[in-house]
Length: 343
Ligand SMILES: [Zn+2]
Image (cartoon, rainbow, N blue to C red; front, side):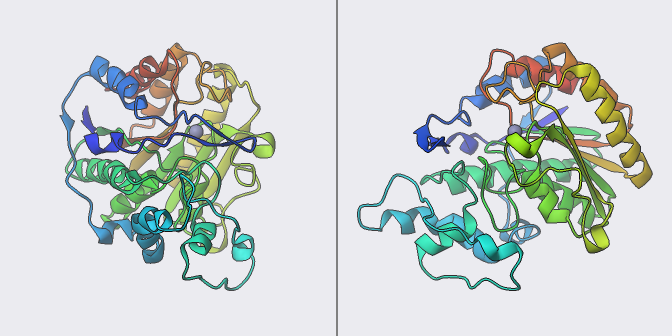
């Protein structure tokens, strides 16, 4: 199995994110990479550095003005008199989803309200470089799959599945799995995305919500009391041409392997009906019982069971790292998942 990773992904090191109104230490830390690399090394195989990603590929899923914002917001923010440590909106463009049009402001504070979705997307001087490196890994992994590889792991950090076309949120800045899926789709592959992160993949869902050519399926903790709160409900089935091409399988907090496995079978039935020739697995490891987010209760051996079940779909697979936060089992969980997938 080839792993794709770029050391520049370590540079993004925000000191905190907003929890209960306070800046708290962020679990989305660079040392996640060390734990994940332990898992990769247990599996073995080459680790390759991706080439830099070009702007035209980023625009496959993101708007030009969002990319301009993300690249320049730190320096613009830091020029504000007495600026705080991170760009933080003091107003959000809440009506954007329901009004025909919301005007786009020129100033950095207003643009922060347009593009920063929540208090868990801190942007530092290094965020753009690390986010680009992360998505370069996903894109290169897609290229390797197109070159004939059957299983490629993109160690993407920061993660991507909460980032939409023009919004950063939930530790995510560029929608890595969506971008990789779109690269594969444009190359003629029929792609399904299976998101197993404990949080709903709302960014990925949004990218493909009105499309029938890429299937999106997400298993996650019920959003009534769990991030991202406003998305991830079973009623979200797609819109317009995309109606029926998004499947959400919300599960109760504390879900154990046996129940998770049943939900996976529902996901597999939908995927089989779609008849894809390529699978993108948005691999959040925060379903682990000892993950700090305490969503589900999957033990280390369960990751192997989940991997083996997914492998039975018998599809070329691109595994994109999503969440999974510092815990004693993080590296072992990745190794078990990848091992189960056939690495
Ligand atoms: Zn997550």
